[in-house]
Length: 400
Image (cartoon, rainbow, N blue to C red; front, side):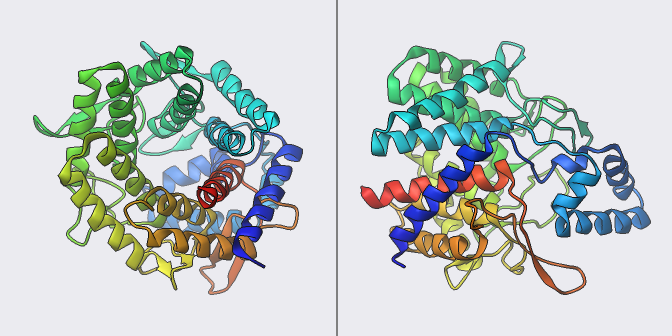
């Protein structure tokens, strides 16, 4: 089948599945909020024997995701980040087709976000609807920078689409939240934003998501303070890039894990590209170039199968598939060869990870016992929302 026709059919099947399913669904992290799993995670961080037990339990959660959720009574939930991604995709589909139904669905997602925003100081944000373990336990619905910037992008798109100041005012409230996140002031020219309001940490992709949104909205409303904060955050991240062009997930002074993975690298690429367009900073472009060529050469098998890490093919995660498509398409004006690679990835992903029912599987995993298996559960945020964005972007690009 022609690639473009395959993509068109895939997008239609996924959209129909979303319409039938509704907005609620499972998430890779929902099951980990159960008290037993949280306690095991905590003990595993402290004791080797519990770390082994924890990893064995996590393996069972991957191999039997649906059964484990039934046994642990995990309920489907509406996830703010998924709603933001759906809103963005449906608005793109409306702009392409002028089908009013897509506009209605996009607006429905925005209205849900309106009603479920969390106030924080002078701003608003969104989080995950489940407890999750990081440095410490993060309670459900605690707003964080990653989810909030995704929601912010949905409002920004509606502002650009309508010119309605309501959406810009919401973006301003979001920037109030983001600018008040805990910050590590590294120097007069560098800082790093933290993931949540609860503690300071250093994560490069989060830092750039916050920086990009502050710079973008700051330029729109002429807020020099937000622009300055964003540029300092950018300086921190690009000054901690490895010589080969890659970025660790964490930044100093965190203990670096040498964890460089596909989809977080994709996030960084997209943010660096957007920041470069906003600022025309040559240092950002230089960093982007180095990161891009490292990404292309190390994170794909035969320029069509996304690998998790440069030295690890598995897991082949649906999130890596979707993000690599989105990233390569976002950067195609600078790196036009990326569009063909994105098409190849989409073709492989549809043929190997899309159910006949229309949804996408979690991915292909390699067990600690040596066998590979597909995790066939539909994750509403992790898989369906992100693949909806990817396929919608791909469909739009080919019509330009």
